[in-house]
Image (cartoon, rainbow, N blue to C red):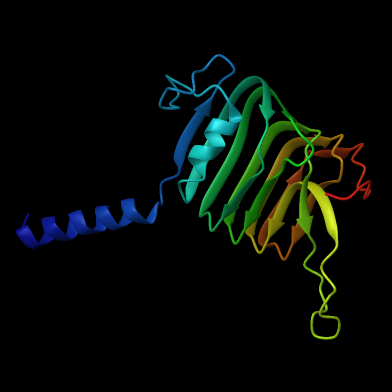
Length: 196
């Protein structure tokens, strides 16, 4: 192999590594430890810790081992190349306060599979505004467990979203391949009960 070919190979590998094409796998287990490296051998304990690690990357796959999890903070993912939240076995996620949701903006290749989300619903502002004619008019406030805006390629499979203080999911300008299968959205109020 010539030196120029070897250097070109290293440059390609470096560029692939820098572009984040390989999604970081983050393993989470109720019996894990948040001081660990979140690997399959040493999983994290809390979903909040795993999601905070995922925020530092543009590609992440969270693998949740069977069990019950709490979600105590809202998380907003922007410009993700790949994001996965996948349960193995019976995975139940209960949101710990009244303003918790997962949001995705300008993101691609999102998959949420085999999880149950309960009591999740973070505040969002609708995209509908008429600033040109009514400059004081703001978009309506609403709550939703999952929020997708300007995203492409979404897969939701074997997911249950229930008892949300708002909508189960909101999709605005989501294109590419959108696939929602074997999923249930039940007992979500969708009502504007009181202000922030």
